[in-house]
Amino acid sequence: MFFFFLRRKSCGDWRSGREHAAHPGYFDSSCWSAQVSNAFNGLQSSAMFKQKMLRATQVPMQELICDLRFRHLKVWREADFSCPRAVNKKAVAYHKWCGSFESGPRGSPYSIPFYLYKDLDKHVLRNFSRFRLRAHHLRVESCKWHGGPSICDKCECGEVQDEKHVLFFCKCAEVCELRMGYRDLFEGMFKTLRVFAPSRSEFIPFLTCHHSITDFEINAFLNQDSYRLLKFVSDLVSIFDTG
View 1 (cartoon, helix red, strand yellow):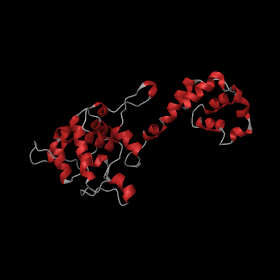
View 2 (cartoon, rainbow, N blue to C red):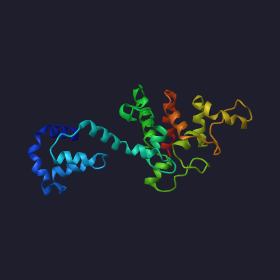
View 3 (cartoon, rainbow, N blue to C red):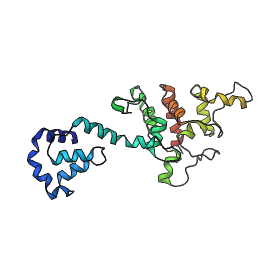
């Protein structure tokens, strides 16, 4: 609607409203011209767009579109410099651990998530989406409405029970058993732990607290084009749904 409104006005059919826009009522928040003017707030060329509106001259639509996109992406630019564990925000966790880093036209990072192209069971699709969007029952999220600490209540690690923890570090027997069933997804990341195993061929189904894993590695893991990954994450979410 906003674009439609500006296209009509920028074509000259609002010139009769110039006197109204210049009227002191323009600064009244209930006035339509004030509401349109406020919509320009936060844009890099906000002052220029407001002047165009006041003078009833054509608004450069391409500049406006680019400016709107830049403002829209502000949340992701801020997330670039944040750590998901230091800043407990859904946008930061999604951007660092789940979002795609592929850039689209004019610098837009948006692309349709790969799993939405899959012919998935509805339960798997729902659970994987919930995990990505932090709409799950992990303590990092549920403590916000249930209260209490965000520390994992299923193992003795003493770590925050977030997506990173349950994917790789949680030592809960049920979670470890699940990883064993999907060991092909973890072989590469967990292979360095075999030096501590009684047998070098033995698979240890968790990372230790001394093992470092980067945000980039987590992102790469969750963006694998693999049905087994989707099913693993879905089963993982179900484990923590049961409490």
